Amino acid sequence: MTTPLRIDFVSDVSCPWCAIGLNALETALSRIPEAAVEFHFQPFELNPNMGKEGQDITEHITEKYGSTPEQQEQSREMIRQRGAGVGFTFAMDKRGRIYNTFDAHRLLHWAEEQGRQRELKHALFEAYFTNGENPSDHAVLLRAAEKAGLDRAGAAEVLASDRYADDVRTLEHYWQQAGIRSVPAVVVNQRHLISGGQPPEVFEQALRQIMEGK
Image 1 (cartoon, rainbow, N blue to C red):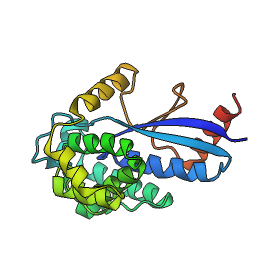
Image 2: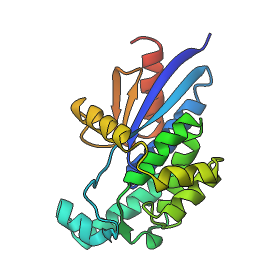
Image 3: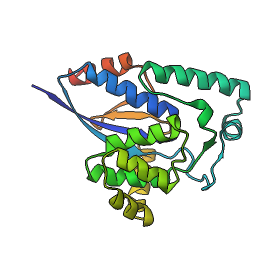
Image 4: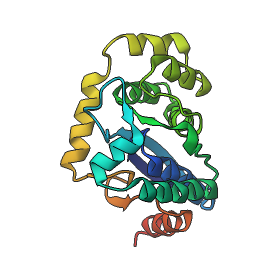
């Protein structure tokens, strides 16, 4: 008998640890074939006030965390290796800026209604981290939607309007009020929190314990 798991994956499409975390979580789930999973991707903006033009990523991280370029290079190499370990390709030389992701979250909200949210999330991670594309650019978002098996015209209608803007803001506020301050945050069955881009083994152990009611 399968045990249903609701997984709310709170994340941003410009968060490298979120890409790592999703792939690691999926690796863990592949080791638990008896688990029936219902994914819901929840919005979280790391930089909600970021302008359309974005910002140089080294400059941005220096301002935000006070790290040196050398420290950032070490961090990028660690992220690249962790990504490779779970089958995700980070092309660090292609990602020079950080961008606003609000429209990407609106499109993800629509994609959930279409039953293709998980596919779009993967396509958006690939567009930004592997291809170095701008996730606030509607042309990039439309290509990602097509890759995810979504209707391009439907996606274009969403992006040309302000549809789902209030829904996304409401959900962002909800998760902030629930205490989510960093991402990825993996909330299982609306009760159990697993924080960060954990290795597959950590996700697997936690999920098995949850399924066993421990």
